[in-house]
Structures are given as structure tokens and as C-alpha cells.
Image 1: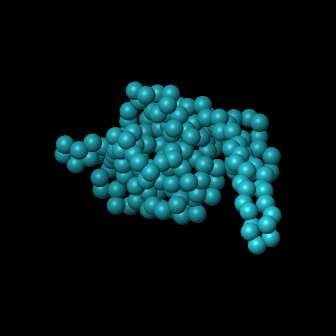
Image 2 (image 1 turned 60 degrees about the vertical axis):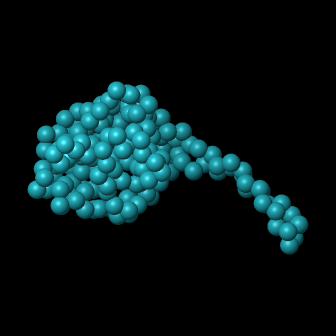
Image 3 (image 1 turned 30 degrees about the horizontal axis):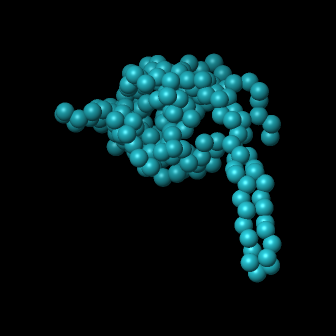
Length: 178
């Protein structure tokens, strides 16, 4: 399938919940699978549909992916995300039993894509948090997890790599906070 040469609009949502007394607020993150950026950590979100507002898209996508109902949805930030195909390095291996070298050429693991990503922020009421589900297990590797902003900034391998739009928030808006 040939990808469109037009940028697409994606909407990602910081789904937030209040922290316990004296604790910071947290938000949802999960690991992508079965699509571009597979293996990277992302926020709930998806594509903006025709005639849909950013708020409507965030509410719809969050419900479809998590089963949660958002309140107080507002614009947070935006990024321009150019995702170039990444070739794997050629691999060379020797088969001693036949004394020959097998070479594999570089292959592209990801198609070129260009997104304008709109980041929204929404709140989940304390009574609704227990409704959290992985509604699309074919698109999420594991379960959703609650993390704080500091955990995102200082996170180790458990939340790395980040999906390119989320990487770009950190890289291009260093003072941004939810």
C-alpha cells in the first residue's frame, strides 16, 4: 500500500488522574503493537475523523482504547512528526558447515509517515478509574500503566522507546508539563 503524501492528523491524549494527597498526578501510557511505531510507548489516541473536533476525537479514542470517560478535555500542545523509514543494518553471518557467508540486505522496517499530532489533556474521575481496560489488545502490547511526568522524563527501559510524537514533545517543548 502506498502511503499518502499528505500529512495526517493524529490526536494523543494525556489521560490524567489526581494523585493521592501530596503525590503528583499521573497519566496513562502503553506500548504500541501491530502498527507503525510498534514497540514504542504511547498515549491513548488515534486519527482525527472528518468533521470531528479535537475534543471529540480525544473522548472517542480514549473510550475506544481504555473504556474510560474523559472530563475537562482541553488542548495541551502540538507536534510536527516526520517519521522516516528506518533501514535495518545489513547482517552478515557465516555458516561453518558450508563455509559460506549469508548476507541480508537492509530492509525498511517502517514506512515514511508525516503527522501533525494534537495533544489533548483530559481528566478521569476517581470513581471511573476502576473501569480502565485494554479494549484493543491487538494494538497494545500489555496493559495501560499510570505514570507521573517525572517518571516519563527519567524513565528507564520500561517506558522506552517513546513513540515519535511523544519524543517530539519532550525534545521541542522542554518546559511543557501536564
